[in-house]
Length: 203
Image (cartoon, rainbow, N blue to C red; front, side, top):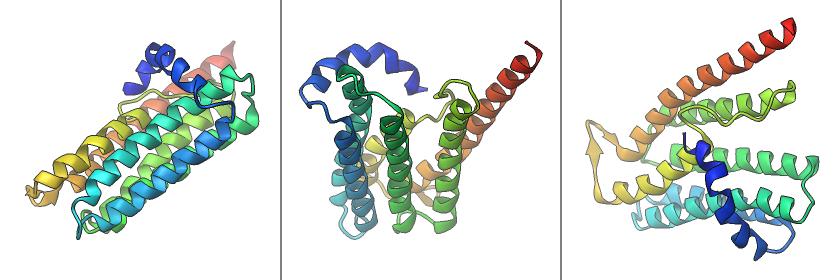
């Protein structure tokens, strides 16, 4: 849902992007480093709860650098297929690392965590597959990457101050939400792509 705000806040990113030079790919890899830090922080945070704050900060930095790498490429007139590939590949690596860190931690039952990783990756796969078959890149649905970043920024902070809720930790509830909302998003994107392909067939 928050991905709808991309165009509205794009103008705010431009002055920030100009300060980071012209190497968009380096910014993409920098976002991956923060995803790795977030994953480690989640994994160790059960024994050391203060790591939840490190995870939260790392998540928002991952999202920030992911938001400006494409902007930097366009401003420097270096946007191309290589940068696009690196950007999307790094996003998927980041998703797997962050959710994997939660799934591997004691905050989450392993089966729930594994299901969350699979669903989130399928959501993103449909977004890029739409582009692969000739349609535009799809960000639609109730669980886009911006939504996940926002949730994963706030959830660790609240988890620090709470215990279990109805038998599950808050981080576990987040994973359950990712599964359910992710399935809905998959159906939304699948339907949209199929309808477009059917329209193309008859035009």
